[in-house]
Image (cartoon, rainbow, N blue to C red; front, side, top):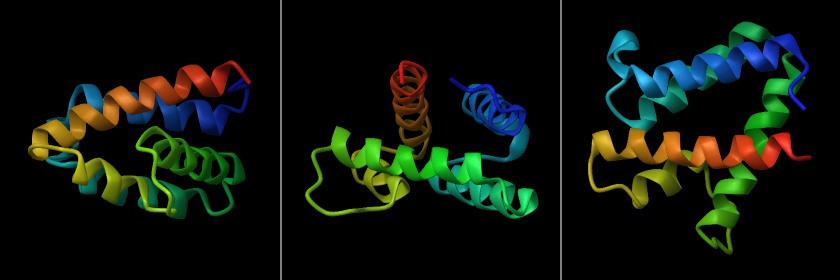
Amino acid sequence: MMNDELLSNFVEFLLFVVDKPGVYGINKVEDIHFMCAGYQKALNGGDKVNDFLFEFRKFINEHFESNDDHDWVRLIRFYSASDRHSIELFGRLLNEYLISFQSR
């Protein structure tokens, strides 16, 4: 379960960004990826967030049945019809991941 406060804050932030991307100037999934990288850098040692994103990457690769290990952002972009759709797809996959993550 997500009992770690840093991880909970990160997930809440991601969900808010997906819900209201314009508030943070997010226009496409690549912007979310850069935002996550900045968040990780700011935490400087947020192992739970790093682990969460690593597992999210594995989840996305499994979801799209990728035989290779691709960045989640590239797979989502590949399966997106537009910039807006890439954000929507990220949000849907994030919610699916959270459900699987919480059941561990």
